[in-house]
Length: 190
Ligand SMILES: C[S@@+](CC[C@H](N)C(=O)[O-])C[C@H]1O[C@@H](n2cnc3c(N)ncnc32)[C@H](O)[C@@H]1O
Image 1 (cartoon, rainbow, N blue to C red):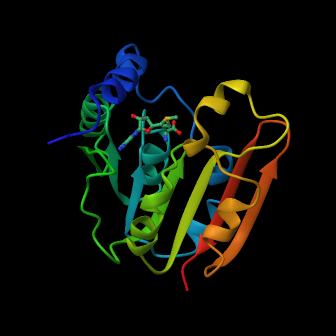
Image 2: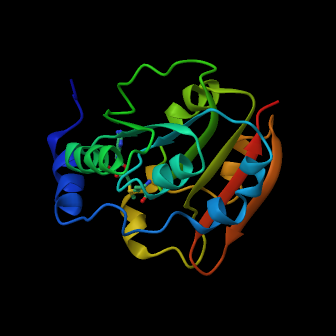
């Protein structure tokens, strides 16, 4: 049962109505650093707020069993159909992350792109296993951040904020791109 304001679901459903799954590319930094995944016998991955699921599909094609969560039932239903048709190991579930029960120490790999809710960070970190890897990319505040994000300070990172959220983990890669206002981080849980 989703208690999130209907507006959130409607907004995202509208975006995904015309979406054709499998047509969007996975994030560049997940692709560029996939050697980190190749060299390890990881089993379970998750993609929180997966949207069209490009990163879920990428991880499933690499051999992971992927749990994909999103609040948009339209995106999730399309991803579910696509993965069944293409025999990909993706369990696509409609979920409001702010209401969801996170299972501790469950995943070996986690992907989050362009979703941020600060109060969920401890639960997100807890759900990765020791030595598990997180790939996180989202919008960071800098002088180039598009003005539309001024209305959504809760969704935008402060400079170096993502880095400090994972200060107790082993940081493998961290970048704040000044031209597109994206912060990306790869970290291993100690
Ligand atoms: C900017 S999109 C990013 C989608 C995808 N990760 C990507 O990079 O293409 C943000 C996603 O977060 C989802 N979302 C927003 N609030 C959510 C919530 N409370 N629980 C689960 N998903 C949520 C939206 O439905 C949307 O798919």
